[in-house]
Structures are given as structure tokens and as C-alpha cells.
Image 1 (tube, helix red, strand yellow):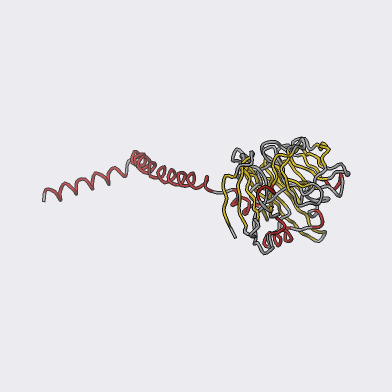
Image 2 (spheres, rainbow, N blue to C red; image 1 turned 120 degrees about the vertical axis):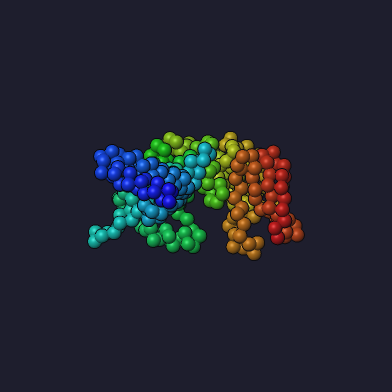
Length: 312
């Protein structure tokens, strides 16, 4: 009975307090931590999930298509993205660059990859690009150091907004850009090899200045430059070798069997990524021996075989 009376007295006391102005203060003091706790919980949840929102997510949310993407040697991610707008006057494409999930170059129709603010070169639309991507073809690629390329003749540096269109210089010249896992080849030296500019043979493009310099070398079948070396052949022979920019022969792929060139992807050998480019002192390629067996070989810059695997 005493306990019931005590409880009733407490209830009366609380009811009396509700009629005082100080009660609202008490309510604020009691309710504020609850609201703060909820806000902190929401903020904490937001902070935990935001860093995991990938750059691709931003691109897909704010752009029609990601044309090309890749990382520089410091781990920064670059994405070349585009939006397409259509009305009764025609089609307009805007191209921009996202770096680490933030706009680095705002989308603009005044892009090196578009003509007169309309479509991409050769009247390629975004829908055409999507079809090509689904079929395994690519017009665009990331070549490192914040640089992008389009069809081996347009090079664009998003860091300084400089670009070059090789077809406007010489319709017969082309950039030596290998696809696949070697998209970071431009990071260290800012060099892209250019083949046959005005019949002058092999040239070197500095992607920082967009200046082209002749080497005096006459070589064909150029592969990308990496670690101070590049793979090419003399004339139309199948004898591929590694050279330095002085033209000195460093390694001969024929020493490792019959080199399988990447145009053999659809041959009876199967589809191999045979892109002989040195990176971090190593190069991997495929060869065939006298028994028609195919081997995947990794060598160092001294020509030593580091790994050899029979794949067929």
C-alpha cells in the first residue's frame, strides 16, 4: 500500500510540473539528445556509404555513357563520359571528364572528339558506341596520365586540355596504342609513338605538349611504347623485335619461337591477348614452337624468361 501511495505522489508531482514553464525546458533537454542521436546516426550512415559510391555510379547517374576509364600511376581514376541531346535541329553530344567521382572537365559540346558540337567524328552517335561496346569494339580508350584516345588518331590530355588530331595532320599516320591491360603505358614518359607522318617514318608524340618529333626510324607494325622500349618489325617481315628510341635492337621475339601476333585472335589458336608491351620491367606474349604448341611467356628487359606456360 505504501508503494502505491508513493507512486501516486510521483504522478501528481509530474502533472504539477507540466504546468510550469520550466517543463518545456526539461522536455527540450530530454528530447534534444534523442534528435541529435538520430541525426548522428543518419550522418554516420551517410559518411560510411558515400566513399563506397564508385565513380562508375556517378557516371551512370549523371551521364548517358562512359566512353573510357582508367587509373593513373598514383591511383586516380579518370572517366571520359558523354551525354547526347536530340531535338528537331539534330543531335548534340557533350563530353566531359570525371576524376575520382568529381567533375574534372565539365561536359561541353566543344570537345576534341566531336565535330561542330554535333556527333563524334564519322557521325558516330552514342547508340553506335553502345553497340560497338556490346560487340567488343572500342572507339575510345584511356592511355594514362589523364589522357584519352579515339580510334588511334585523336589524343586528348584532360590535365591541360590539349589535344591533337593526327588525321588533320596526315591522313596516313596513326598512333600506336595497344588495348587491353596496358592502358597505363603513357604514365611514365608521356610518349605515344606515331607511325609514318608525311612519310617520315616513326615519330614520337609528347602528350604533354602535343608536339611531334621525328626519329628517322623506318619501322612497321608498331606496338605501344613502355619502359623505354617498343616492339616493331622491319618492313613486312614477321620478325618482331624490341627497340629503344635510338633505333637500337634490344630483343628479338623470334628467339622465343614464332610470335603470335594479335591479329590471330580469331585463328585456330584461340583468342589471346598478345600485346608485347613492357611494364614494370616485364612483358608477356604468346609464341608457337615447332610442334605447334602455344606458350605464354613472360620476359624481363634483359631477355630472361621469367615464366613459361603451355596454353595449347
